Amino acid sequence: MRSALVIGTGLIGTSTGLALAERGVRVYLRDRDPEQARTAAAMGAGVDEEPAEPVDLALFAVPPADLAEAVLTAQRQGLARGYLDVGSVKGELHRALRAGGCDLSSYLGTHPMAGLEKSGPLAATADLFEGRPWVLTATRETDTEVLNLALELISLCRAVPVMMDADAHDRAVALVSHTPQLLSSMVAARLEDAEENAVRLCGQGIRDVTRVAASEPAMWVDILSANPGPVADVLGKLATDLDGTVRALRALDSTEPGERKSGARALEDVLRRGNTGRARVPGKHGQTPAVYETVSVLISDQPGELARIFADAGAAGVNIEDVRIEHATGQQAGHVQLMVEARAVPVLSAALRERGWALRGQ
Ligand SMILES: NC(=O)c1ccc[n+]([C@@H]2O[C@H](COP(=O)([O-])OP(=O)(O)OC[C@H]3O[C@@H](n4cnc5c(N)ncnc54)[C@H](O)[C@@H]3O)[C@@H](O)[C@H]2O)c1
Ligand SMILES: O=C(O)C(=O)C[C@]1(C(=O)O)C=C[C@@H](O)C=C1
Image (tube, rainbow, N blue to C red; front, side, top):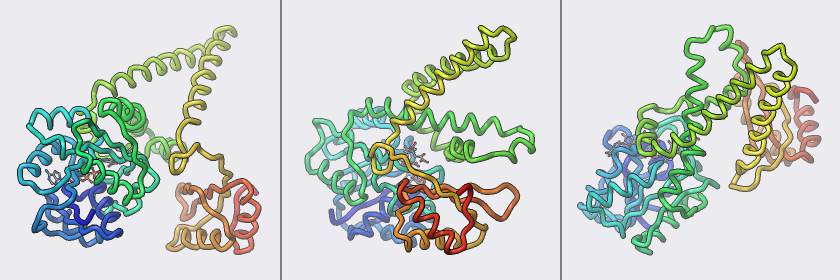
């Protein structure tokens, strides 16, 4: 692929532009808001210009409700050899495009399973898609040349291609993306009017569960509006679990030992099922999750602390598999939890202590 036009230079469009530009593709950037395209260009995602001739690939990274119109208009203008969107829902869009007279041989619906709770070009990074699944909903109508362009794009973004039927994709993301977003928002919404004394106790658990509750509501209304049935199906099943859990907790409140026992059993059942489900969540690069050990280090809240700790771990020859930061309430300090392989724990702990870091619980 030699050239691409990114339409919609927010988080996803700019991240794709950065990855493509870094690997030598000439990227043109366009956004309804010219300021966003200028910002993306300034970040190195491409040039804020219109291509003089048709590009190899036009990539649509605009909100789901704007996708159909954007693709149809671009096709009418003959902007590219292949037209790809990255929208979060695929079935309804495909039907809207067919109804709108889209040339379905040069169009392919795709969806990178990577993102953030932040929007806009400033949140973009070139490595956003590395190791992540990128769904392709090719059909018998899709031109082989367009499918190959999509595979090249995914490879340039270092993502992992996954072929799926559009409606099967929508049912899958209802389970693994759309329902989790709603639940995260609902848990966070409980904090809205909570006592300050309760909120200041927030630890890592609620931070993990509510990260995506910071997402842009307008984008999510769009996404959920395009996939309401499958999301309602998953939420309905969750409602059954919720009802059962409320009943179990009420039973635990009872003075009758038999009832308390059955409440505890029901709670254990839902918690165990949670363990089983969680164990199925793929780890880094789509592999089965590895079990890492944690080395927890006290850091002060000042520039360069994280860089210093990573450099010290690197100097000790230790690969950090994952990292988490726990901020201490009301203090200019926190703990950084370095996840490493079990055999690396003694090496890392000794090396960090030697360099003056304070380690917790070891
Ligand atoms: N954010 C995520 O986590 C994520 C992940 C995968 C896919 N997606 C999908 O990617 C798409 C973009 O999401 P995002 O998070 O990058 O959003 P964003 O809000 O960061 O960026 C969207 C950009 O599109 C521009 N825009 C809106 N309508 C336009 C139009 N008609 N023509 C040109 N530009 C237009 C906006 O000005 C904005 O700059 C959405 O379809 C979303 O479903 C998002
Ligand atoms: O990680 C996040 O912050 C995301 O919201 C990313 C996420 C997801 O649910 O995994 C959200 C919506 C997109 O369609 C794809 C990815």
